[in-house]
Image (cartoon, rainbow, N blue to C red; front, side):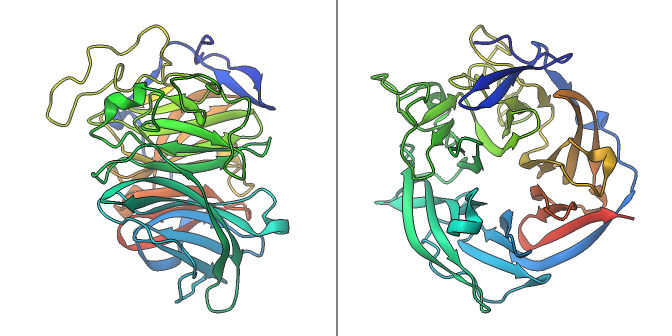
Length: 386
């Protein structure tokens, strides 16, 4: 394993045509009270309201947006109006507890092929798991539909419970994609084993096949899709194109949320190491670090329940350029982390006055920041300068 996570500098290491980075051994512990409220140099505009537990947001080249609703609907926002009719052809999802329809991501060549990718919970014979599928989006005035639907991946993480699916998707510059998978809550020990997809990040070609250079290809006791392991419930996953780094965050229990730099073949430690205790108050592990397990860059005690992650690349807020933004469910804000050339700095809390759980946060192609509020009556909100 590389010398992981230096707070003073980040080494860029070429891997699969992208880079990953390592930062210093000491993680940045972040108590919730240590992050100040941001100055309100912004205004918030409701773009769409009345959504049922929105989970993910994607921007189409024509200025429209796609929004997933966890109960199993894909919606279109066009000209700042939420179309009444849901997109047709979306697969039946298992919607219970934390299960449902998760991420929606456009293929890098969407303008040519019209393909979108969906992650969702799928049930068979009373058991369920995470799936990845793709289809061609065909827009129309009513709401649009999906054609040529194809299942690309079915996780070997079957369970009867309905928690911790991960489900975030990101494309890499080489045309492959990463998808996070949760450890199913009750199956945390499986995150350390390579013969299943609990608590992993998987890497696939855009057609669902396995890249030849995945780290465990050809290993008899390992599934070839696995890119990294030892995760809990990663619901933030992005590629920093400027620095060639994959960032992910994941939920801890009572404390121990993590922000990590994702590296090929790396073990991120759950549940053997963590800065956390269980919901019962009992210790999950006596260890916060062990040889061969990566340290997080940032961990949160107590938990902020992170969901959604973006690097701001717009031009509307120059002071935010290149910074990380994390949605927080439990503490109902968006967390900004100052990020300069891969070095993590100060943090601040945004949009606390809304008193809403934040499910996703995205940088729009128009330069504005967008985020989704959770639960029934969810919204798509645009952030613009005052």
